[in-house]
Amino acid sequence: MTVDPTLLTLFAGLVVILGTASITGRVLARRVTSPGGRATVDNLNARIRAWWLMIAIFALAFTFGKAVTLVLFALTSFYCLREFISLTPTRPADHRALAFAFYVFLPLQYVLIGVDWQSLFSIAIPVYAFLLLPVLAVLKGETDDFLARTAKVQWALMLTVYCISHAPALLLLKIPGFEGRSVLLLFFLVTVVQASDVLQYIFGKIWGRHKIAPLVSPSKTWEGFVGGGVSATLLGAALFWITPFGPLEAGAMAGAIVIAGFSGGLVLSAIKRSMGAKDWGRMIEGHGGALDRMDSVTFAAPLFFHLTNYYFVP
Image (cartoon, rainbow, N blue to C red; front, side):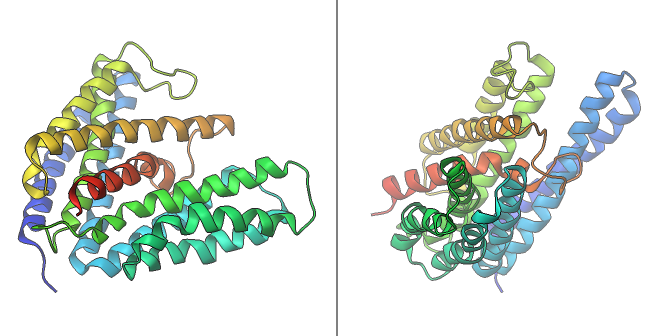
């Protein structure tokens, strides 16, 4: 078992940053007395605790290699898919299609990454699952709300399995001069996505005045989006040295990740609101479910994967 020294350095840096953030959060929790201020500090501390958990899990996965990383993301997709289906009700007639989604297409997607079958990985769900799942449902003979029911299952599988699986699929990319270091692309993606989320929250709380979509996500403001997005983009540019990109290319990639991640969060918030729910689940204290933490990744991962594949893989 060998660990990339660059990755080790990066995780050590994250531990220092999170340690500082944790200490700052505790100090603020003691000093802030107003109800609104305490609510903000409590939310921030919950985000920091969630970050500690995520970093510990990712460190374990990155340390033990591709197989453990794939298992981690497969389990993440499983919990996200379960949360999506739980929040968007289905009928008994859909159970056969759901069984195939959970126990055939979900594991198949990650097995295809494991065996480096990139061509089939790219079409298994958007082509074969798209065609097969409605057939399995229609054989039950129930036509009430058939289109809506089918769309729910297809959307669930696309977002929580197909889209999220593009994050570990970065390990498939064969970039000249970057062989054996693709795990750093995954680190880059996760770091920029999560930093953007946290920084947008902080900027929004401090300077946020103009809401972007108040009925969809009341906490998202233009000030938070611009301030947090620009900061995360600059962070991505500063991390160019762990990627095959130059500084400007890394900044452009980070900018694309920020915009896609924001869009994913907004779209999935709209789905939650349409179901009358605030969170997708209760898996993570103070942060709802797994999908509440992965909503940005659902849009950012496939975009980052395909941009990298198109511009940097021969």
